[in-house]
Length: 113
Length: 112
Image 1 (spheres, rainbow over the protein chains, first blue to last red):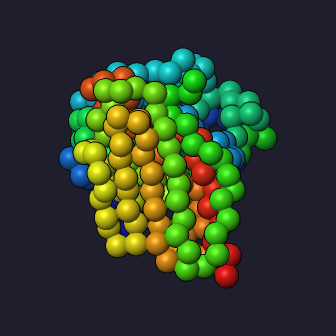
Image 2 (image 1 turned 60 degrees about the horizontal axis):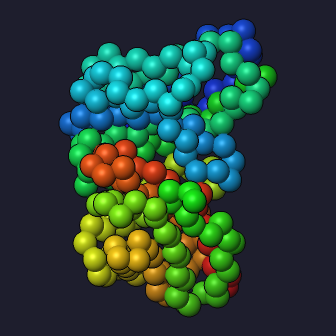
């Protein structure tokens, strides 16, 4: 069982909808990440939070809005998405040190219609 | 040159054979190297991490690191059909960064 929990597992939304993806970890990790992964491609970094502050935004369109309410929670708010945004969205956490591996959640499979 | 390079494969090996997966990276000051396994439609799962030159063994898996050649590999002994997956190499490049850069992944197929 993964120690990083993502909800929902699947999400279908229209281009005018607003939805949120949620991620929770209880490993005391200081860094949390959102990745986007398309089929047969590696994970693509979107955002990184370190100590609850946004430290990296990889030029992600504003229709994706991250939020870190506390050290255990990470949200990704979605609004006015496009069909090409359909992908597997992965949350991960780590100790935030050079030697620290990422721990991934099970992901949310997002389909934009 | 890409920062972390892997052959996309597929690499096909018979059951019981040794599968050898390779990864090269561009930054000489990289300190941390990881192998993740990803089954189709699932999230990546950490299987090995290595930080020093040489070999590190864990069960049927051996990670090998050669910093002089900027090369890291993963050997899977006694390959099983359940090992069929994509293997992602990740390297913490940009000297001191805690954020890994992923290679494109190598698809491994173990056939009975």
